[in-house]
Image (cartoon, rainbow, N blue to C red; front, top):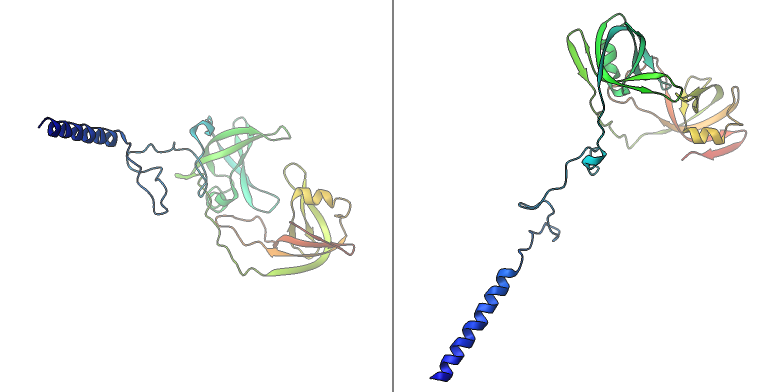
Length: 251
């Protein structure tokens, strides 16, 4: 009888130890379809919300910038276009003088069609200084004729996978420059504007001259949503350049 009691006591101890070990095991996180733990499953801490672009991981909050906005009031003198003929600014006359108010080109159609020359505007934004030491006012929102237009992300352009590569043969009419006076391409005598990166133009500085005959192959740039142009022009994204019998591949 004593032997049986010992067996019962030993069995109870073993069962109690097993239950204790099971109770100490941590629950496994639920698995995703790929069999990996779900990092944002119910009950799990979520990553911090930050600022980022679509399709990219959000930036941590530590990288966010705090920008002080100021408001100016004035009258539109005339619109401003960049080297690609895209309207991207307004010259505004205020009580303290003329201010160059810049905005992304994809807002051109909306802003230029509303803020005509002579229109009274109230603009909120921040002020910066460009490399030449000139103060530039960057628009965050503009109110004109009771209409408020705010800076919003651009609409992604449609991708034309069947875009045809074309060839153009003509003389260089003039070189085209960016805001920092760097060469960003050239205009052909036939009217097309060829865009190339500044570092490519620098490598070809001795050959890119007015009157030089060139053969350009490339793709015609489609109109981007929301952009308004100051003049009609065919914009070419260069693929190859032939100058003085030498052909260069532009990457």
